[in-house]
Length: 284
Image 1: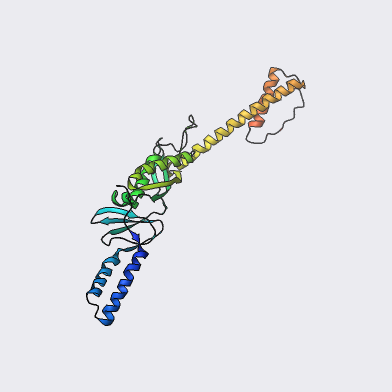
Image 2: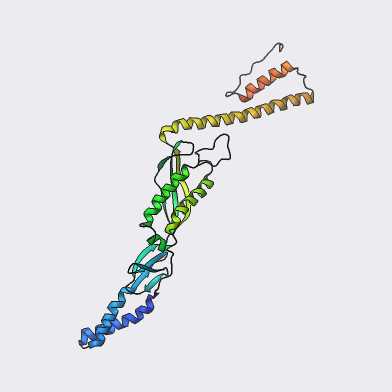
């Protein structure tokens, strides 16, 4: 069921017709007690028409129904008047947001993680929000958490070492947010809800493996740093040997080159500052 425009007219125009009739009837009935049939008809008319007035606030919709049948939605703001028999239900069209609860789920590698998300949403079709689901606010909350759980189990927490371009929860926030928004929107479209934004607000390994995973991350960082240091050190040694040969500063045989390379690598790759040793004799 899709939203349609409901019947209503400007409430101020209608009030110009109802209020004078009410005033005339009141004066005739209360002061003279001789209003007769005219006053009685005016009072009955006012009593029948008065319940048709209602107010529509900005970013708000009124869903109109007649004996259980949907007759339309009024979004025009201000004082409105409609048929008094129409039942009116107020639906907020304002943008709302909420943070899902922190849930524990396994990523696609089987690691238990904790995850939560912030979802920004609003009602765009009042008819679907009212008639397609029992409680659209509860529907948004439950389906959003279900989408977060499904999305978290579809991606790894960290990209694998052999697949650096793999989309992961921690390393690709933009791609994960887009995927999460599409997942939630697909679930909430039937309820007339539009998801404006969905982002992860909390992401961490579960407590039972957090310590081990921290050590793993530290080890991976150390290995990556060491690999970069070794690459730089080898380049510097190669440059030093080439520079010595090009400038003809000293001629080194293979054994001396090996000794020099060993010393340079120890100096460049060591964790601590090297202690110089002065050799006052021959190299041999």
